[in-house]
Image 1 (spheres, rainbow, N blue to C red):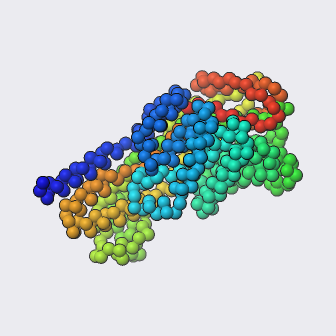
Image 2: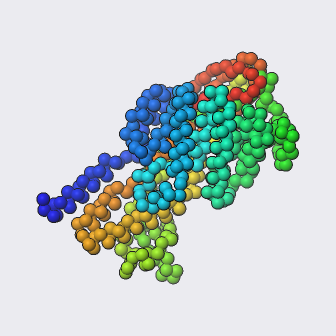
Image 3: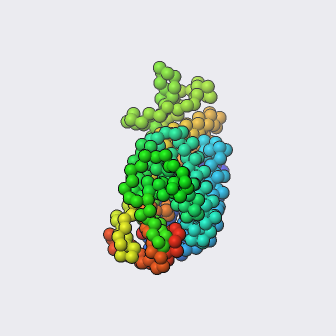
Length: 453
């Protein structure tokens, strides 16, 4: 084989590998989506377990997230807890500084999957429910403590910016509910109060409206803990309105499926600001301008911005999957109750996307520019090898379209007083789905979730 033919062969091989890896995570998981929409959890589990994509080491966290939720929905709570134990371990492992540093060298799609902050809260929500359904309140309390650690990490990561997703009030309310169910009214009060203050102080609308039961939760647990809550509260209902002789039902309504990620391409050019000497990337319309914190002149001899040429950036963006059910009607013992929004997962996902948009663009563009400089250097030494590297870089550039796709679009909830003994619950959506079940009022707090995919 001649020298030219040899390099052509290398180029074609690299291209063929890139073509084999095409497609978003959503297109790879369509069969799982179909199974979830049909409430066929056995089929959904089979699709997840047999997925070549999820079977890759870099997708281990995503595999256990998807499997954990499906096992939970299928009533396999013990198996689900095992799944989420791996999730917890991998979330901590992949959030290390060392892993972040690797991100500057590798395409994000080829790195281990890292959860979004709201996905971490939802993971602990499901595992807490698993333990509550297994009558293991002690482990559910452990999950509440883990939620608290995630909330603290989110707050630090957001650098106390009120216009960013820096606290999750649903996670805080879930903590309060778990602590209250364990008669730990002091910690329940702290969690409820933190949720209240998050709603009050946050400048982002994606968190939704504060539930009207929350002020009453604060007053009730403060009295039970013998503590002054220290807040000026506007109370719309009695603090004991959700408590009956038979206790309380906390019913979560998980509606729809979370948004998915698609891919789009941007084209950028590197330019130098002659006044400041700094470099920035600009798009063809000169609408987006992203300054780059990197000294190209120091790290490359005789550097010119035009050396970089046009850079193609593959970027992931969210696409919503709107639920077909828009409203649910709830009756317990023939008395009507309303749901309140607890966790607008879709809205929060889009908020996180907005929060990180320019930061992620800048990081990705710098990575591509450095790869381009390496390509130029190689080309000067070996034209064919430089061409091969250039084609490989271009053809393997793809967006990271992974996210936890089996979780709901939103979670609503209702807190309902129970009679002693049997309580009849009737749940119906505006699109005709009906679910009826009974709950035994035992004087305590009973948790349950219903699902309309």
